Structure formats: C-alpha cells, structure tokens
Image (cartoon, rainbow, N blue to C red; front, side, top):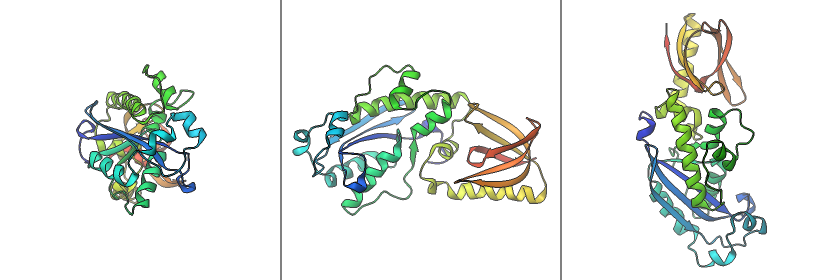
Length: 274
C-alpha cells in the first residue's frame, strides 16, 4: 500500500453517531456508515444503526435526531462492527477528526474482545484541511464544505456526513496532486495517524540526515510546505535534528532562501546527498 499512488488506494471514509462524547464514560455508537472511495470516486457504501444498550442523551438526539425507538430493534455492536470491518477490508480508513470515530470504534471492539489490526492505515481529513487550506476561519466540516463550494447541508447522520466528507476529501486530494504530491507514502507521512506503519521509514530518514550532518555534506530535499501549499526542491546544509513536542525537525542552511530554516522531517518527501 505505502508504495502506491494515491489514486490506487481504496479509502474507506467513515463516520459514527454516538450516545454522547466519551466512550470511557460508557457512551456507545448508535450509527456507523462508510463509503469506499478510489480514484476520486465513491463506489460502495455501508450503513447501519446499532442498539447501544443504553439511553441516548438528549444532547446527542438534538444533534443527530436518532431516537431511542429507532435503535431498540437494531443489531448490537458485536454484530455490526465485524460487518463494517469486512466492508473496509484492507482499505485505508479515513474520517473527519477521525480520532473521535476511531476511539469509539476501538472501544466497541474491546467490549467484545477484539481490536484493530496494528497495521491499519488511518488518515485524518481535518488534518489535511488545516494543512491545505491554512487561512480559513473554521475547520468544521460544514465550514470547509462551504469554502470548497460544496452545497450539501450537514445533517449529522452518519451516511450523509460521509458523503459530504468524501466530497471534501476529493477536493483536497486534487489540490495535493496539483502541487505534485501524488504518492501514498508521502501523503500518509503527512496525514496518517497510525504512525506504526511508517516508523521504520521515518527512522531511515532521520538516520540519513544524521549521517549527512556527521559527514558535513549537503542534501537535496523535496519538501512539502503546508503553509505555502507547495512542493519545492531545495539544497540544504544540515546542521542538527531538533525535537519539538512529538515532531522532529531538520535545522540547516537553505540555499534557496539563503537563510537558516527549519524543516519538519515528516514533510521531507525525498532526500539525497548532493
């Protein structure tokens, strides 16, 4: 998967509606929907209500309008979630603020003694929006949709939100391709959330940079700048690797900008010794 083009990847865009906000407090999924998406087009869908075996909070009902009566005869999570995972197959899971959805999905699986495979690829579409559309006022799904000219109203039902998210995703991927970023490995390095998939590759990149520093040689790098929304090629004289929070950065003299610059290492698409 990692070495394919983005257009060759099956993305499974999904969304959940829940009884509340916190699975640790006992909140459960009451609806899950998904759409398989490839080469910019959806081609299959999945949707089901779930019986949460608990009451739906008034606040949740006010948002999604899913009533207790609607879910009383629905199947349980232990029946629905395996069907969802079969639908997803080996596709890359994607969602808008996907950490929320993944958190609930993993919680449901733990309740019946299962867990997501460690090599499950997961992409956060809100992270894409923040990087590719850096100057808009709000990154809520409805706001981003309006900014991109998508007119469908957000209904806060799982399938309709998935359909809107898929349109946003298609727009954002198109903008990346226009900037020259069309391979999945680099895409996932920027927007993936399950970094276990690329830990080895990231370590190789860090080791290569450190080796260049030790040898005192210059690097040619291909770099994706989220703020400038562009991919550039630069010659850099590497100085150090710096850790800031959870991210690592290459600090060095940039011959393109003729000044010292800091480059986020997971945004370096390619590098080679000059």
